[in-house]
Length: 420
Image 1 (cartoon, one colour):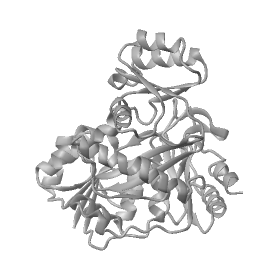
Image 2 (cartoon, helix red, strand yellow; image 1 turned 180 degrees about the horizontal axis):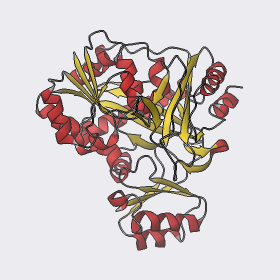
Image 3 (cartoon, one colour; image 1 turned 90 degrees about the vertical axis):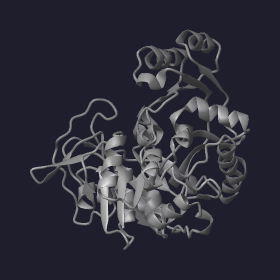
């Protein structure tokens, strides 16, 4: 079987390593991939947003199954384009991917179908947003409507910060057209939980929960990033809360999308806040989270490719989806300065066992693996307990080297405190 994965980060590397476990896979291509992924699959220099190029390659190679992993190509309609030429895909089509592609759409959907989320207001003009902020409760959350590499959310602690966020998003256009509209949201408090779920539009099967660490610096300080590390399972996410989320959030979201004629098939990511008033949705993503995938998939005991094929066929209810009872911890090694300015091009040295090292930003030059992004790689370890997984991950981190490397020293600390 010929399989193609679209994307080129740590999430895709985790998917590739899991897909390789299926003996039916004879050829595995990743578009564009990266220098680390090239050790596990054939990387092809076609960008994830080059929909025409992706389709042409898939036709040329007679690809049997395609996995579209990142948000951009999903929102741009990569699945629609591939299915139009007869290629079976994992991932939502364009009209379902809007759940992540537009925060205005997702907030309005939740309001319409009474799915618990933060109170909010939508603005098309900076002047209106600024006037609203004169009396809005502080702190508040400012979100660009469209995709922004996971960085389009600004938590404003003061009124001045909130106004500055409006100026930078709507007037300075730091996120381009994604900031044409903004959402100003109530600031929620409580433990955060990420839950990825398989769904074919008829059945929802949540994966093991996880906890992301978004801020760049220890103690949840610094700028928001794409994620500096994660652990699974999330100790705050109890069986009782999981049952409540299924009843009030997961199934209602699937039914709401069906009612809107936007049936969602693929991985639906629920970013949740466990508030004093119960769990509420902070955000939806239309794909596997990054770096959540790097702790969730190593705990998956069932065959990932088979599950994906059953979702594409609409037979998820028949799938075997089993997760280990163990714990996992992923520590992200980034380039110093990320998510701001940083330098790349430094040689990376890795330990002999790279089975749980997921490369996000790297390239190969003259036979050497060089750093090539803000987030360079993730180190994941699995153990019987979370404390052991955290300890093992940091031990492995010590065996990975490149100049300019930076990582948080407290991944899992908050979760371990919750277990006591």
